Length: 141
Image (tube, rainbow, N blue to C red; front, side, top):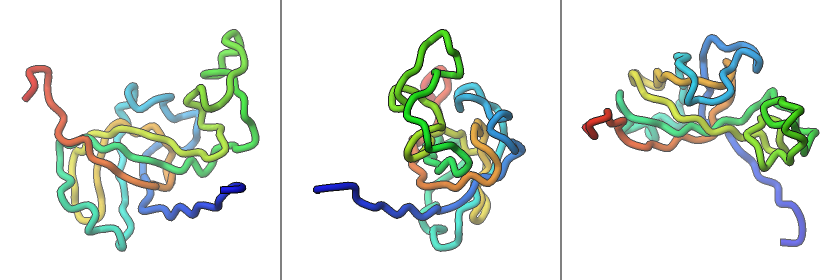
């Protein structure tokens, strides 16, 4: 390849939740207990086959409200840590604002997947979903 290639990403759905601004969103899914619903668009309904309550899903999002004009940030906004390149951070500010979250599935009904652990704002486009399988408790069951 001699130069940049254009890539088209088509959202497969959208998240619905109570988080309305980036400032309200938890910094990371592991510290979130925010419930939400993943609405999967009709053309992708068949791809949901096999998703059920108790599973863990890895969801990729397009952070449609994120800035894309900076290549260096202060990690977690902490100026004492010095500027770092965005590829060395989890900052939402990046050339392609793709986010990754893990959610526990609470319920599946039609084209809706109820989850917990949401760390993105209401209306964020869903790019892809991958299953990690069932969540196990501390005994491995």
